Length: 326
Image (cartoon, rainbow, N blue to C red):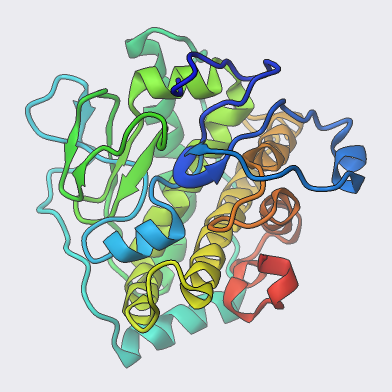
């Protein structure tokens, strides 16, 4: 929901996304017409809410010392589900050894194992939505654990909360007009406030699959040291400057690519058919042009890149030409 009222996915009105610097898309693009849409001139930026990470790159990077995006669990709230009872991990400064591991992870071109996702039916009731997300998280963990451990990094499970009034270790949730969901690196949690999520995504299964896979991509960045390295570099830029925004876009687009990697690993098995996986990849074309997340086409291109190339080497956004991450 935004200031003008409720806007459902697929309607003629803008829908909320997930980042406080992500413009809304007036109408959803289907797989069949995505090619024709790509040929049209980009839509002007609109006020955003966000369907990707919770903090805009500038925000994420600025908050990165203690936060960064969507999945999380806050103790004591019945809407929270903690995947693992572990002390929150703070964001630390980058070091040469971590940088080498990150470079090796991307250069090695690791593939995710084939996984079977047995997902329950997506429903609008709290329990049905939670069950769907937890099942996808379990599948995401099966896919990413081997890659993280091969990179010699500790694997940590992520938490989940659907509370509309959650208080994260990264601070209060941004206004619903700016954020639909987010991941906080300080408590390693994904926050999917149920009202915001249903207002923004309705019951579009592809959108929910893509959104959670993207947010989990930020958790992968957290576990592998990418987030720490980006955070350290962000401190060299003025917030909102060209350098700050460019680095943020590379960070966000990499999460799209990681989402594509996961969708490829799960495609054609269990509850995610090949068509389902492709539809989720193409859903990234609905995230609109953004100074913090890139153009609609670049956002979709990086998700496709992960899906089609199938290795971590495909997700080296730091080495990409400026036009590919604009």
